[in-house]
Length: 134
Image (cartoon, rainbow, N blue to C red; front, side, top):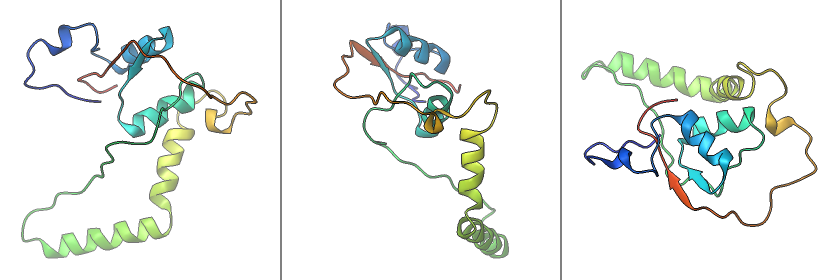
């Protein structure tokens, strides 16, 4: 989600929402596009086949671990374990398990059979973001 710290009154405009559920609700009503962090976007799209992503990810980010400065052993060991987990595709598998399997009542949308592919244009009257987590 996008935070708007330092912009007094920004959330008072009708374009911004306080929760992801509110943003998705506005998208479903039509004429509204919601900016959402890509992992959450994928999570919600796997559960609601009426949602779609427009374009690619425009601000990719990665996560990192913080270790105490000067702790070379921990830094080295953690780095090796992370590389091994990537090599074994463990991190990708865990991500897919969370996004595509966790708390689903049916198949994920990416695996659902759908003859109607989204095409054409999308008319958007406004767009918004929230300042909190889902």
